[in-house]
Length: 308
Image (cartoon, rainbow, N blue to C red):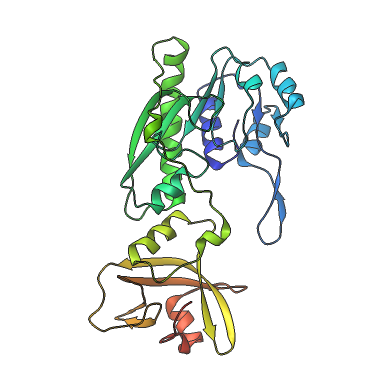
């Protein structure tokens, strides 16, 4: 059961491990992007290619539970499914439901653990293999493995790392669990933290924050939904998406207003409350991505203006 890119990697590892996957549950196809094109989850594409039955219930209701029951699964692997699995379904497989969660539980329970780890400037995270119960990521832990977060990691790069390590850890864990060579341990619920749900408007930059906080937001929200700001050009307010940025923690000698755009050697800097954001690639709404140099060539008045 899964929907995200992580799910596809996990399914691929089970197929490569020659497990008999009798079915895949994933979310319904969704409209994606500006053109709102109907898009299948990657896990569905892989399952279809391997001739594995796919189920996409809108709700995991009694009808979905009955479909699931007919598969007679011994074990269920869940990875970023995005739906609450009812107690009636959790009770069906003899070896239970195992969840692959990309955080070191009980820290960052919920749907966006990678983004939240990056938001908060964490230096490490990891993968937890756990038994599922009726709560959200509250089940007993089978095994955990830590991963170092690099200073330039984004959600995209960190997800790639954790998908690979999570798949490998799962393949080590399944035989140990089936053979009862591993004992599940309860989480310390007093240490639990919940994820912030990520929405498109979370990408709004507040230049009154410090540069490191803004840079961490950029890392957390790359590739989706990205970070953005507003530029008042004459009487027009333009939305700008910052595609690629850099960080300088120390303020320059020359004083600038918060949100001011200025030349910083060969770079273009934006003053924050503490430190500088260096913009490298930018996209005006409705236009193509441009390098900082090309954007300034097209809009020389950008230098010296104040971002909102």
